[in-house]
Length: 359
Image 1 (cartoon, rainbow, N blue to C red):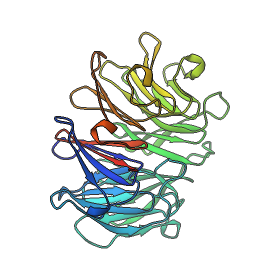
Image 2 (image 1 turned 60 degrees about the vertical axis):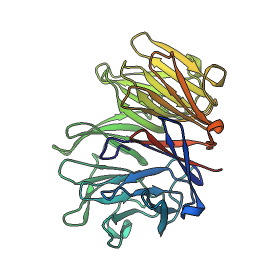
Image 3 (image 1 turned 45 degrees about the vertical axis):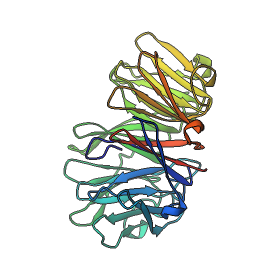
Image 4 (image 1 turned 30 degrees about the horizontal axis):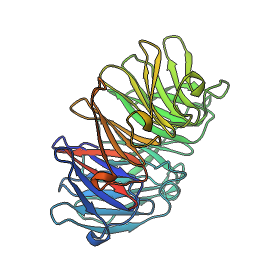
């Protein structure tokens, strides 16, 4: 997440949080002494510069100026098997938080009581995995059973009726492509959803060799759709309708492709459970990096391309910062006072990084 000053922050699957300066690599710990504990999977910054940490069952609001955090709500389980639902800070200042079984929670960051939406209020499912806002401030929610639209002006939910041919469930992520077009990934396929026409073009994967579960997906500079999942990386070319797969058989470092990120040269970086892979679509090559050649650990779970064009890679033993010609790697790990088990999100703030840790 990028704040209004163009800063970036990191969160992790952890019980403490750490602030790291990339300029001097100094570490600032936030834990029980500041009123914070949990395993933050995402961080959002509100208009008062406070940080909202979403953990497995709690939301904490952290005031950087006072260096204190307060617990504002206890929820049911937020994520399942390490797959966290989305959170979104709306243009009206509302924080929208999805959950694994408790529907949609909406917090007014100005101090009003939270609103709570479940199937009783019109949600298709209490599992809300994806949240995205359009240019009209309407919020689109991908749930286990379908797609809902939330109108903050009327505070009402509407159902988007999927075409009968799309007989799938478990809608996971919704991500903006360009303008009014969004990418919706689900169990058994993905769709290109045009908000202006309210139409969706669906691409079914149920009768193909492509994985049925996508962890992440986006459209790259080559106009192809890249997805990470439980059996590596799958690439769809809409011009030809052809799928291309990258697994360990094709040289990928691992089968579990948690996160994908594209760099400025059009290469696709892939964070897996057994190493980092860099795919060059133009050359059709795969380069792998592990602890033996520069990573703090083989287990990678977070990627972020910062404003300087460097790739920040999160592992369960620290972070590595690569310049894109691979001539320089900067490590921030236990030697600097950082020892997180795994990282899932990154937010940078004037060269300051926030990371959660179990220690």
